[in-house]
Image (tube, rainbow, N blue to C red; front, top):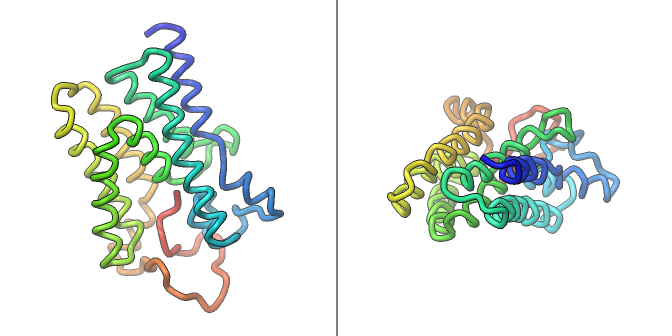
Length: 213
């Protein structure tokens, strides 16, 4: 690995680490870390500021992932190193140095990296997510299953690049691990469904109605 390639991976990490949800919330006078689940992802921003700002955060988090991979590709990374750029972008989002190594769960940023790595695969993964969420309304379940399916989809579309599969698997495990509390609530039957009405404002740490991004 050259110095330029190492710097590209570091840049992918720092780009992915930008806390978009927090910044947009603060621009509106709201610290989203004190609202709902306390997460900086699009779901919690939607809860705090409305659907428009929630979608904006989701879109920018996706673009972070796309930009990180495109930057690595522009520097000359390919194969497993390019996939490592995707992993580092999601790692940065999940453990941001700007937030004392705290962050979101990485779903939107993962989608962005996958769009840049394998656009057809990203569409298939999104279709898997939609097929789970539509009947169940469990966004966390759809996110976990779609991310778990991503390495399989990637390998099916790129069987000639097995070395790139390792970072993709690591990325998937990272995002799934960030959903450990959601998974525990799903197993206990306590996970809230997306769109479920609430009679009061949720407190930090309570079960959320969707996976945070």
